Length: 522
Image (cartoon, rainbow, N blue to C red; front, side, top):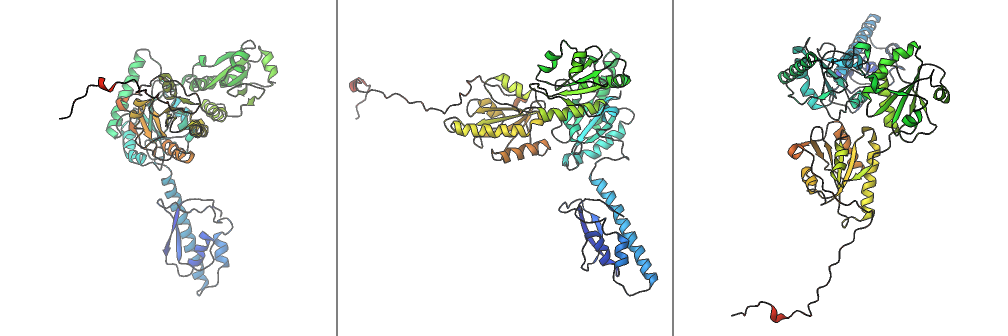
């Protein structure tokens, strides 16, 4: 009887005259006498776990057989052993039930469909139904508050609109694919499953149902007018074959090797059955990865130069060409063959290979637009005036920002900075300046919200702020006027120390005091 478990717990006392000591030994590997104890999981306490306790080495019967003799008959001994075994089994059953309940907000008995990376693509992306999907974390207070309303909405919408939930704390990769930054985040997967929209409606069941029915009505009207179907069930892909770039011996170097993008290239043969099976998934992945990773396909039976160069011996063979300057380093694709497998593998590799983001000075409006509009979040810093913090000081702050940018490069955020006083509207919009400089804020231009860092402008301070924000723990506020601030065009910093302008002395020697308009005092 061996168990590998790890969960929060407390020990509750009870009365068991002859076996209390030995039952407690089984649980904690302690030898001294104790009161009778029953293992109980505690949701509130997370101070200890059982991962260090040696369950396998101390099976129950060994303890019972090796215990000191107690006063009583053999019949009493057997009854006591049976009682202890029942207590032990009961405690394990209770542990299983309580632990399961603390790790998920939804279960098989709910009308909310539990979604994971293994079933998400087939269940949601390849379906023809409208889906509302909540990305949540079990520890999130707002998520717990939403849970009963989400269940009510799922029951009311049963047979009309699908309602699902993803534990994005456990399945972070899946949440990351859809830009989930906080909890709960609700996405609407409608006519174009590869471009879900953010749900911005009420968080009560009635409001959720009304919003879902409106979205379903819009999707039906779109179909009537010849619009796009909601899913990708036909062919099992849902992707656009045009998003797969056709490669040849002639264009391979220009398209792939001279590109700064990351590439996945499939070398195939037209007669290959496995290649035909892969085709719809390859197209679907190409559509979903559009703008992040490029997917190409090369007919290795025709374009033999490249096939020979990369030693292609079977079909299909997939090679990964990393982002940035291409050298001789080419990796084998070793992931699954479904579109969701391909997307997940590509995004993981992209995160490993992408360079750290540039930390750019806000010199014109286009810089802020590129940092905020093209990214899920943009991190905006305002550094002290150059006269208050010379080049060495300023460069140390920029270095800190670069280190943080590298640490969080997988998120692909935008990073910008401005000098104090140069972008007044920016500072007013983000409430920067009241706590001095340097200051830092995170902006979500899609939701037109921002969060201001209150802690220290240091690696640890910024890291704590961004970590809390990414898990939905940070406080946010709406951007003033619900738009990004206007950025003034300024000269970029030359990297040098600031020089205080010296005013010229005024020569008063030629000034005639009699010429001044004076008034005699009475």
